[in-house]
Amino acid sequence: MLALSAFAVAGCAELGANKASDRGIDSKDLLDLQAGIWVDPNGCDHWIIDDGLEGYLSARLDRDTGKPVCSGVAAPTQTTGDFKGGATTIIGDIF
Image 1 (spheres, one colour):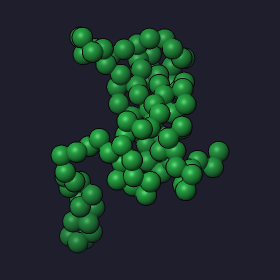
Image 2: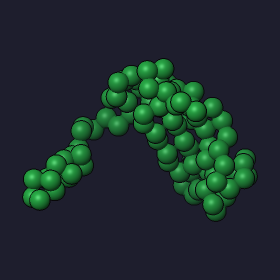
Image 3: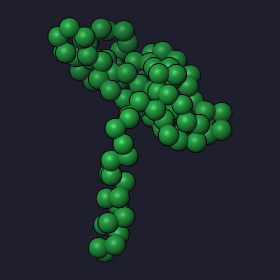
């Protein structure tokens, strides 16, 4: 049980200071991926990227105030934009 716990926590280790690049099968800079917008149930926007095997999500914040952006670009729980545009052809979405 102790060995299993140690294995489970091993994935939480710090990999380095640079969080701006994808280190997966199709490694690339995250700036090369296309983001879309997912609207949460409260109506606020979140940046979303689907890289096939991996996915990225972060709150969309106003640059000046740091407050969440709630633009109304889509209905709550819906997405908009080509957020699968950076997906790999090796392990892409089958849908």
